[in-house]
Length: 539
Image (cartoon, rainbow, N blue to C red; front, top):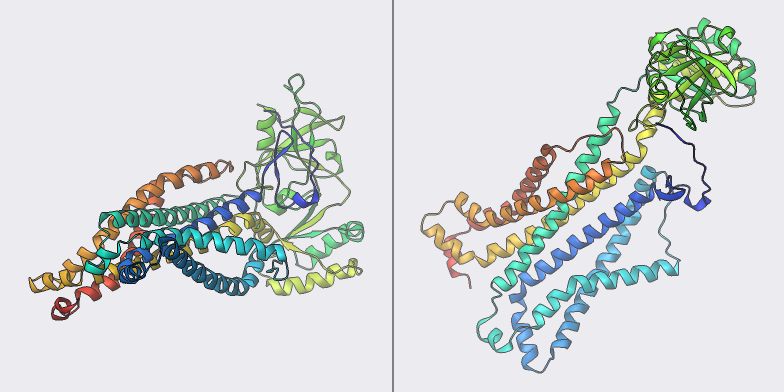
């Protein structure tokens, strides 16, 4: 399979958001996560709007007589609709002001997580225009159904016998509960899968030992004094082994095409990583030679070592002693090293050739002795490097810390996703709590009669809870295939990915049901423990 190098031109404004290209056109990157979180934010807003609709319509009889009296004295339906919409706008504006306060509080933590300097542009007119429009849109979306529902009451019936919506009001409420919990369960499943994908890649063998491996970028002074630095590091017991390479241990440096190799097809081109190294490179990094031998000195300048991925790319069945042409120079393959992850822990190992070069360049890499405390080692290393490079401060990076940065994007996704999923569940539970309280209030007399007839607290708890449990179960059934569809598409972008098993859906369902039970049990048990005498006196 050929690997072709593509060159694209990209505006500076797109550097951080777009990194994937197909046929020379932008096809994705971090902008995909921006879109994803925008959709998730809209889902959370939808859940909040559903709560408002449910709780307002559920307690409609509290305002039924008000509506009847207003209509009886001449209020028109459009006047009532406007009144209820204005109430919705007022509540939304108050919520908006609270949200500004909470966003301002959370921005420092968010900026630390993302490494950004985002702030609220209070003095930007466009910011306020967009937000005012959004507030009005949300207020209308949340308040429309309650407004039209409440304003539609017949004044004669309302003033005579109150209002009872029956199935016409109950079923829409149930559908909305199912909708909001479907969104919440889908977010829970997504958070689980993203976390599993990160852990799956973290636990993948890297192909080299990152423990106490330190990397320092070389400048001219360090390159000129490399041999002296190496000798002193070993003599002073500051390092177990020392080497250098044109690329750090956690990077594959630069790529170029191989000119010719045995079995090359007409017109075929391949692109692979190219790293110049010194002797002791593989031993210092803890990489394993599969066959052949390591470089030993200047006699190896016309030799090359491939990793397993490079051998597979070139389709070499017996790679040792084969001759390739690199930069119009014929070179012999003298060794095969096992694959190491130098680019992405989610992708196959990068096909790489290792070339011997006697001229120090790139990065010095050295492994600290296990018995030497890290802080003491850094103090002594600072003095040593300052001696040979006094014009610059001692610069170092631990290989494990550098490797950990390869997970930054996914960690950046899973942390807000977990927070948003928790927020969605919390908002949904607030709605359930209100509905449970309303249901307990509506069935006060029924509960009193059942207690008089001998019903236990557990039976009454089950009576009040079962309807909500059924709704949450239906939500889980709806959310699972939808989440599976979108997560499967998301995972396709990773060559090394976790599978989606049934366990995650079971755990998400159990979690949703457990949270639901905790939420509604307070109201259910409170109603079940009420004195039946008081219950039967309730009007």
